[in-house]
Amino acid sequence: MVREGRALVDQVSWSVKEGERWVILGPNGAGKTTLLNVASSYLYPSSGTATILGETLGTPGTDVFELRPRIGMAGIAMADKLPKRQTVLQTVLTAAYGMTASWQEDYEEIDEQRARAFLDRLGMTEFLDRKFGTLSEGERKRTLIARALMTDPELLLLDEPAAGLDLGGREDLVRRLGRLARDPIAPSMIMVTHHVEEIAPGFTHVLMIRQGKVLAAGPVELELTSRNLSRCFGLPLVVEQVGDRWTAQGLPLS
Image (cartoon, rainbow, N blue to C red):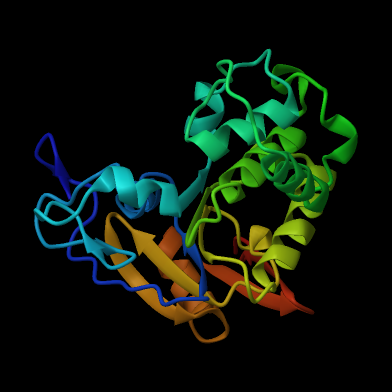
């Protein structure tokens, strides 16, 4: 993937199978969000091929407008597109029509029931009538995930879902993501993060990327090692698994 003469990601060979839950881990500027944008079909590779849910981008038989509703996306870019004066319930409901704002459409009862169910699953039932723009960062992130699930996606993409959250907000979100990741009927998932502490239980695989190149990819228990993490972030790190969560810290300076 080349933009303005610079390779954002280079020689990446990676596949996600049905039911897998992947974490893309790496420092700022590594190419994580670029990969996610390719997976969402909003960015095309400048060389090589990208096949998403059986459809190869850029080929005559692929209609991205039919493909995109099969992909749920939650991230900062989506939050910026949503009207701040819309209620939480409306914010989730509009996804059923592939819209960002409500415009005189009549929703079916089943749509409203589904929106309420997803919001309840993410702990947002008491906020249904709150304006989206008045939510805390954590409440906003949970609303966006509920919205991304509204179309019954086959692939769920999460772009730094815990960014900007305080400790309590992060732990609440990680707990809820863990419940979703363990659900056998949930879609395949890809989550971008900088922090191993944000990897929810139930995530099965990790892709580590640095300067646009893949350093490690595979089952999280095998690939999330101190050696790989140190190479990924460019300094000596120790990673530990504590129960079903992960922690990392730098080695003390001598």
